[in-house]
Amino acid sequence: MEKLIITAAITGSRITREMAPYIPITPEEIVQSAIECRQAGASIVHIHVRDPDTGLGTQNLEIFKQVVEPLREQTDLVLCLTTSGIPGRNIPTEERLAPLELKPELASFDAGSINLGDGVFMNSPEFLDRAAAEMRTRGIKPELEIFDLGMLITCLRMLDAKKIEPPAHFQLVLGTPWGAPASPKSLIDLHGYIPQEATWSVIGIGRGHLPMSAMALAMGGHIRVGMEDNIY
Ligand code: ZN
Image 1 (cartoon, protein in one colour):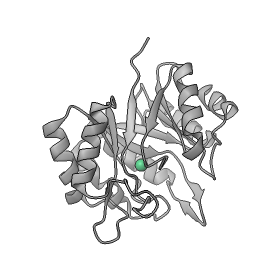
Image 2: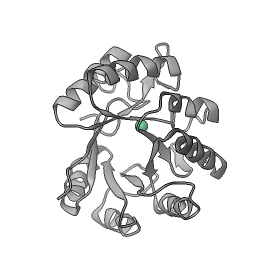
Image 3: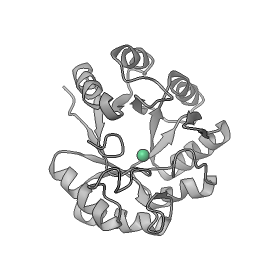
Image 4: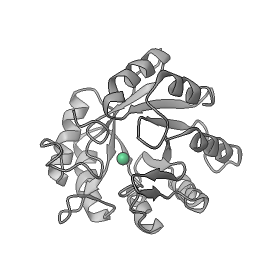
């Protein structure tokens, strides 16, 4: 049996101290939390950093360095840096892709556009092509974040077109109010489209966390945990 890969999504971009008193916000807090997650068994950390003024997500390279450098020195964690910024805020492509400069092993790749609250989280074909190309030239593996079946189909097309190199690594995001639900039917359906040689992992958002994690484990998948996805 394959080893289980646990990804810890330390902080995300939107959860505030008011919503969750233990959410790590500063670079020091994020580093400390990542080290504790490593000690608890996580092998990948998914990293966002926060703007010290707003407390919300930022793609500021200097702040990313304050997290990435100590983690490189002190741990053997596999680093997955976000390219989403604040989903729905739709910042310029250069800014979103800035963390790739730090050559993490993995970077998130939101494989299509989706409604988010009153807005739209834009991931146009042009953006996806550019993100995939920049990751490929730097030897960074895209973590293919899948919020619905259309995004998975998009990734299969990009694999076919050799824009993404196999074996792919999928992260199925189940239970956002706008995408695939956190249900067994939904997971089994998405799983059916994943190529044999690919690795895959599941994020169950909020109350979907435990049931979807348990199901992924039983099906031979990997899991993501952490306060980006579930503040409890
Ligand atoms: Zn994220």
